[in-house]
Image 1 (spheres, rainbow, N blue to C red):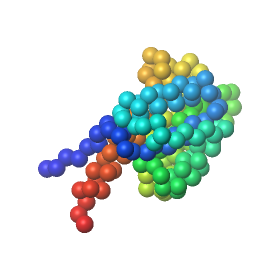
Image 2: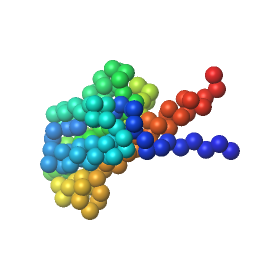
Image 3: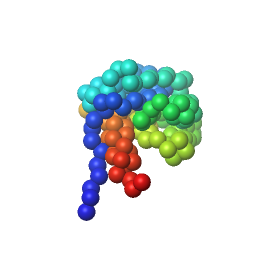
Image 4: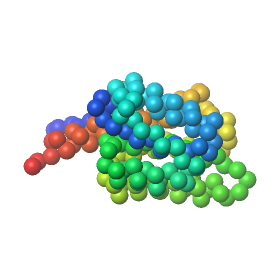
Length: 159
């Protein structure tokens, strides 16, 4: 039985990152983690495009715009939505997650989800480089593996 898996090899692949500016104390750390992962896995700096948007809400549309440009092998969404005292968190977190998911299906491209949805700033900081690891690093690693797997699946498909 054949087994196909993606490898953590970014050399020669192009990546787009959409990162929100809201909660930048957290998102900057996610972005640093994502860039670190891409570099460690072989991506050249010139093969990585970073686009900053105002907030998490703007992430899905910008991902779609990048995908439609046809220049990328995978995209990475980075943002931090932190619960406040109103229902705003619930609406934003849910719709951003749905939006990122739908972009991946609509544009037929791997889109990795590095959007934190936390109850507190402390939780977000933990997940952006403290004791909870760096979810930006993890999202970039998943994008690399997904892009490689996609290439392998296309190469092994019957013609």
